[in-house]
Amino acid sequence: MGTDAGMDADASAVIAGAGPVARPGERPTVRLRDDAGTDEAPRYAPEWLQLREPADAAARSADLLDPLRIRLANLPGRSGGLAVHDLGCGTGSMGRWLAPRLDGAQHWILHDRDPYLLHFAAVASPRAAADGSRVTVETRRGDVARLTPDALVGASLVTASALLDVLTREEVETLAAACAGAGCPALLTLSVAGRVDLSDPDPLDEEIAAAFNDHQRRGGLLGPDAVTVACEAFTGHGATVKVHPSPWRLGPDEAALTAQWLRGWVGAAVEQRPELAARAEKYLAARLAACAAGELGVTVHHSDLLALARPTGGA
Image 1 (tube, rainbow, N blue to C red):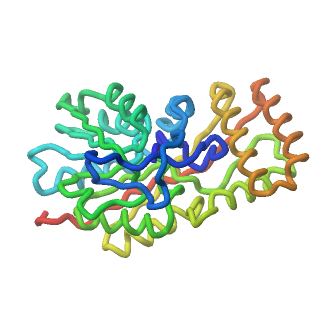
Image 2: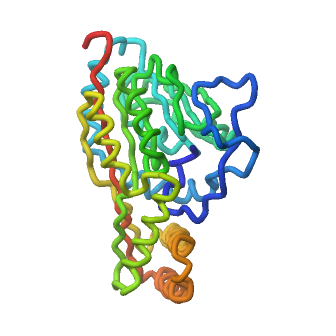
């Protein structure tokens, strides 16, 4: 879906629209939602994905890596290296963060609907694991909104960033079932938690946040309910689930990201509740001025989820 690097719900006002269906001859391991049938603008702007990458890297929970490493070390067939499926890879920031933190040979299968992002992700992918083992990459074009039954056959690990909150309950259930069927763990990072803390609180903060959260739930998308739903789905398929906070902590050094996030956050809220427009315009101007002056601190709360499915094939 072009997420994490996706532009998750944190800045939905920058989201342009749905992407194209897979063309004949392209490998249909993932397919688009049935209602997406025309070539349109990519959903996620590469500039946004690059802007948020350092904050994403700083926010992801390192506490989930040890239990993940233990599970990966005990997977059947590990001697052949890891096959990692990165769903909605965007510009590939998840691979750049995770591959150098895992030992052993890795083959990353990058999924996204945008061919430009796939090219960027492949070119900028890491080449070595934590222990110096080789990391290789392939790309597959398509949308992860609905996995085909064979999408994860042979997978050692499924990763995604800023993805869960832009899926529906049915799509999360399908993802959980696919991971369970493959017997592979899933590390799903940076799902919005629906909470934002800003320095120098303003009475409009809570109204904007509530309207934004409602905007994220439009059309049956999960938004801030995604982690709870995903926990239920993976647990229902016999997985052990661990959740850790992964907040963005934005200060003066992240002013460019903060400003872009603010515009998206307020814009989505106004789109949801147009009656906020006049007050929101003044609010946004004041917040942007404080940001430019280095006087604004923002904590955008996210959650990382590690689902350890029961391995198949004996372990």
